Length: 206
Figure 1 (cartoon, helix red, strand yellow):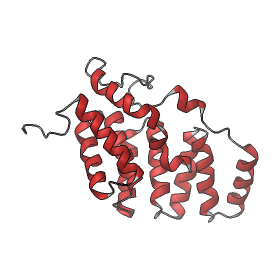
Figure 2: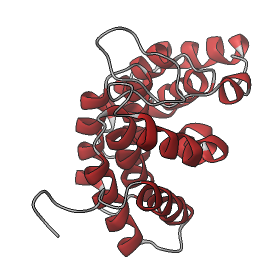
Figure 3: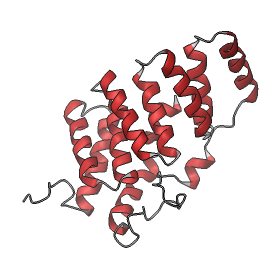
């Protein structure tokens, strides 16, 4: 499912973007150098024209079929998750949020849906809300690798917090070094540390 691995889908652009952000953040008031501008007063998510061009075309017939199921069965979680996935993959994040929230109301113990909701918040310029939702995912599964990887992305891009990103990615490497998310975290850490060697140091540390 595309939504579950959104960060990995950015792999072609992500590491160049994060290095560009590190090098250009101070000159551009903390805005990622290579990302398009966000709405005024809001943080921005890392996006690209290439990524947007690969957005799935929304299948309205499938949407209507799933909506019919959801309307007839107010407790059908899977139909709501599938609707969230369809809207997410079509980059209609506001609608994805609606259906993921609806699904989690019925079943709050699915870390994948919780994390997809957090990612949707991020792509609607709500990084603090995204991080709060990721915290909920980790309450369900403290070792959830996609959540840990996405926390680092939101901290680096949405909050301009390189130390926080480094810390969570290092934790991910300790927990699951051979996972796809662990490999992505390793490459991100290499890029950060090469461009900004002090990123992982605590204030006042050596």
